[in-house]
Length: 251
Ligand SMILES: NC(=O)c1ccc[n+]([C@@H]2O[C@H](COP(=O)([O-])OP(=O)(O)OC[C@H]3O[C@@H](n4cnc5c(N)ncnc54)[C@H](OP(=O)(O)O)[C@@H]3O)[C@@H](O)[C@H]2O)c1
Image (cartoon, rainbow, N blue to C red; front, side, top):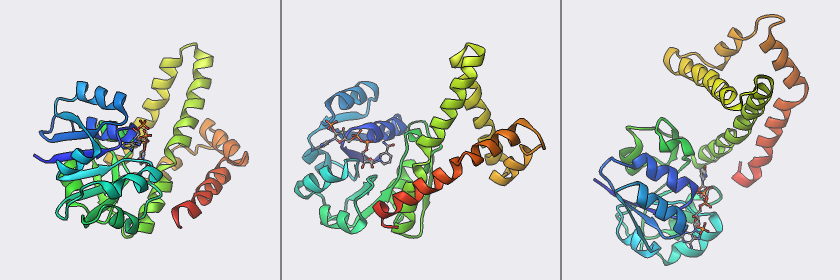
């Protein structure tokens, strides 16, 4: 059993707490956001709500889940301890800055959870390695150490593929629903198609190239739509968008 604290009770804390539910840990979340904290306490038996100071004082591992400007403002006044593990999920706060903000703690790591952590099976890149993160999520999710802080920041950009690709699937599903008259069934179909491909990758070791080769029938509908989307500039837009994130991420 670990005492796990969360500072900043918003979207990503809610997902992580739901992912930890029922695993015997003592979970403390900070009072803000009050509505999210109350919802988590109502939903998950192990959750209690406390002031930021008490969350840090009463935890073996503290997840910092704040916006960067708030973190810079409030972390220096919190009672971190030398033997405590601190795990930041924040973009825009470097490891150097965290060491200063969370002193005297030195076991400080950075990771990138996404909302799928609530149900497990999500990807958790981490830098540097964190025994606490592995102990908490190593059984349920894929925790893997990346080689440098720059590599972690590159993964932050990679994680930002999520919204545009999900939005593309949503657009396609909406189009399908307009043809069939059943939006829900259309969304289930599109999600199921991709879940199938992802399962295929996970179980057979197929990579993206293998999937694309299987969808490359000459004059096939997939090949035709792929070429159209490519010619319309979608791939270039995605790449230029990723490039545009680099200055913010120090890349
Ligand atoms: N959402 C994601 O999928 C995701 C993924 C990876 C990383 N992250 C990172 O996670 C961090 C949080 O993102 P989020 O999406 O969870 O944002 P969020 O939902 O806005 O959560 C931030 C939380 O911090 C709270 N807060 C504000 N001031 C506070 C204070 N003085 N003391 C304690 N809590 C305070 C906010 O409360 P109020 O609502 O009352 O202001 C809010 O509940 C960001 O740095 C982001 O880069 C998010």
